[in-house]
Length: 432
Image 1 (cartoon, rainbow, N blue to C red):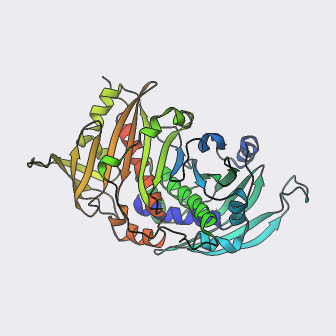
Image 2 (image 1 turned 45 degrees about the vertical axis):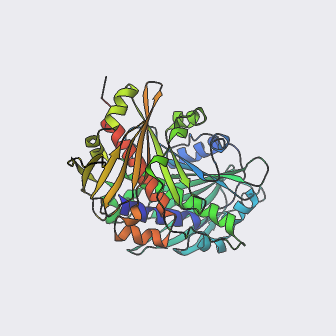
Image 3 (image 1 turned 45 degrees about the horizontal axis):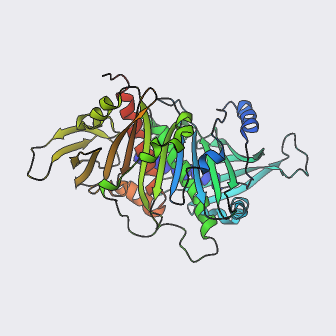
């Protein structure tokens, strides 16, 4: 899944940055829903921008996944982030093709090859013509390309992928000012078809029921933050990408309690929710993902604390308990079963309000995760928080993150979601 998420994140991000257009804030569900029906795609039921804005912070982004236990093909994923810039500055990035390369350096082509009037629109109503973009993205392993129409749908911009990689698909963006006028909430909705890409991506997309959703999320987060970073740093001396060393937080610092709070309740009702936390330097702090399980919280907590249950994690083939050593606590040995990454290793497990694990040997030594359980209507909310050190998991992930540092967060997001969803799926039928 790691390699797929990498390639997918680059391609989807490049496709969007190749031709986005700025919009203002406000509701767009009716217009977007009509467009979706016409195209045969899923209509948006995304919560309002104000709902996202109420839980966003300068160092915290929110991601909304489908509510279904096993999402169908072409899942819809929404990412919301807070941009430390006025809406006009964000819009300037989206409107200026000359800045697309700055937002996504791996984009090697983004050309307008055709123009048509916006259907049903007057020439002077501010919507402008629709543009057909030919795009190509350079990836160390291969290049991917396609074409997409840019159009205005109400107060949203739609990029409709019509042929090539990940078509049919669409990306929709909304933005609105936050109180004070010096910051903006930017939200993206992404829905694409992984099966139309090359054979490598098609093969890995079938790895598990959550792989396609995980890669969509990785791509959506990367492209959304790429726009945000460009808007925040343009014309300043600050670097456009995180450049400091990757530092993993202490396992005791991991905390996903916010996802169980009342503030997140509207988002939990809309789907599976995740939060991406960033450090002051822009590096990944950790990702948390919350999944509902229809069982009493004590039962769920006990299952989540059992290492053998963690074989539900993507790539974890087996878990073996090792002999106890003085002051070492419980140790487990993990063997992986996924190509392109090395997840073999030894983990130390501790308890005390949450089940926490730290990788003490193996390629991803230093990786950490924690499970927390909270009462919820109809069962329990299981929250997984993780920093998986995918940058150390093998050549492919390391190379990709070096080229695009935002993939540190995007890949961790995809993996954390897939792990939480897979374990929740396994525990669906447990009872007291």
